[in-house]
Amino acid sequence: MLKIKVLGPGCANCKRVEQIAHREVEKLGMAAEIEKVTDYGQIMAYGVMSTPGLVVNEKVVAYGRIPTNQEVTNWLIAAQN
Image (cartoon, rainbow, N blue to C red; front, side, top):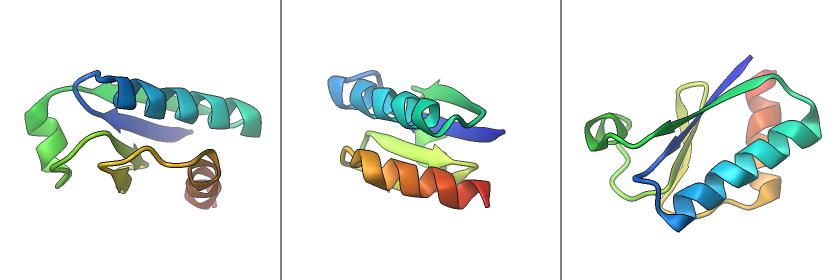
């Protein structure tokens, strides 16, 4: 099962990244746990200084922007292999 974390305080961009993650996981039919991380201490522990951030299996794949659906799909497929 993939572990996905959306890093951010809950702003509109953070919610958008979470929606993209949910949509792509569902589209691919993958088993994944998606967690929201809003604590700034935990976010900074990943080295992320600007949100939103996306972490797949404890690897930061994007931060400071909204990734495209295709980017998220690619990261999810790569993390599963």
